[in-house]
Image 1 (cartoon, helix red, strand yellow):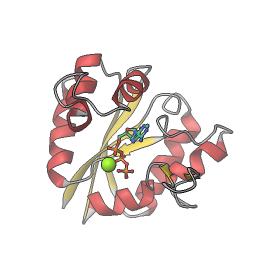
Image 2 (tube, helix red, strand yellow):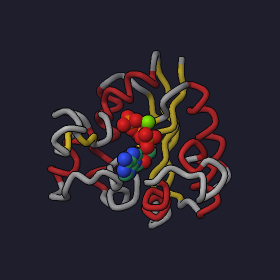
Image 3 (cartoon, rainbow, N blue to C red):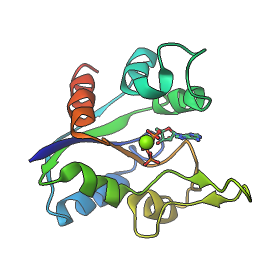
Image 4 (cartoon, rainbow, N blue to C red):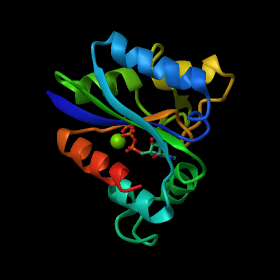
Length: 154
Ligand code: ATP
Ligand code: MG
């Protein structure tokens, strides 16, 4: 059994129909939602959660870090502990990827149809946004444990 930290981000977390939709996608896939709670990230906690993008300082941070921090600290999130067999990979599949930019044409490549990141903005008439996406899910078992521990301290 694996544990993942799954979080509906600001702009979406205050919409009950989005929370219900995300929970249904997870439970329909046979995953178990152990807990779910509304909390918010301070700047410091955002830096801890996104340590791989913050890299210790704003000088060293990835170019998109500031906008990411502004987004994640902009309002309440809904964080969940989700468990199941092979949970990490299966949830990442349900979530879909972030928006990518085609290097040659500069065109945006949206997450795949049917994924949560693709379907939820359509459902509530929000644009697909490169930073302001719907949801986070841990990308490795170690990340799951680390992120769940941080969320407990919020
Ligand atoms: P992916 O499956 O695409 O790797 P992810 O959820 O792992 O998605 P990260 O690469 O960890 O995403 O990035 C964390 C967050 O930072 C993203 O969800 C998105 O909000 C934001 N982000 C990532 N890359 C960019 C970018 N190039 N421009 C703007 N925001 C970005
Ligand atoms: Mg990533």
